[in-house]
Length: 196
Image 1 (cartoon, helix red, strand yellow):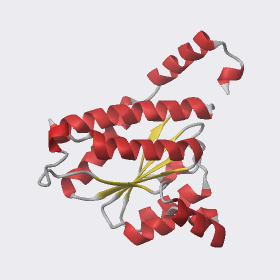
Image 2 (image 1 turned 120 degrees about the vertical axis):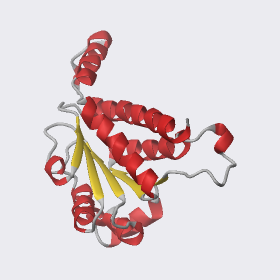
Image 3 (image 1 turned 135 degrees about the vertical axis):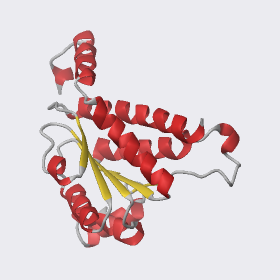
Image 4 (image 1 turned 60 degrees about the vertical axis):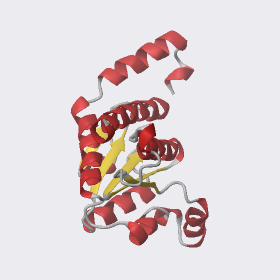
């Protein structure tokens, strides 16, 4: 937690330097993977825990709404991005977590709704969350495309996911903030590609 050691300006300067270390090709690859699902009519699923779970929900909302022009809100002929965050069905998550174990909360949802060719975006700062890894393993075995968003060393997710957006920093808060910054560029890029 760099904010415990740095004052405000040095902290913001450090965040700025870390943003410059992000591989722009990885961010573009994420946008391309989502756009490919859009063009082929496949679903995009997102999952994460804690702050990464919040980022999954935020990214889902932004992609679902933010890729549309206001004038297309009531246009039923306008093709929309098919997207769902697996972090948002609280009763379902609690039922699986309580009855069968928290490592099943995402994979069991995928088993109900995912198909080959869909995309799973798995967000995990550590890259080692068992419920994330289990979902990605299942997705890989069942013909989904997988994209990991990681920090720190990337953990197991960095090699398990087919593609990655990696933030090489050992500070969870900044990793999550950089992920969200990258996600906002992806939303803007997809708005341009889908609606302009």
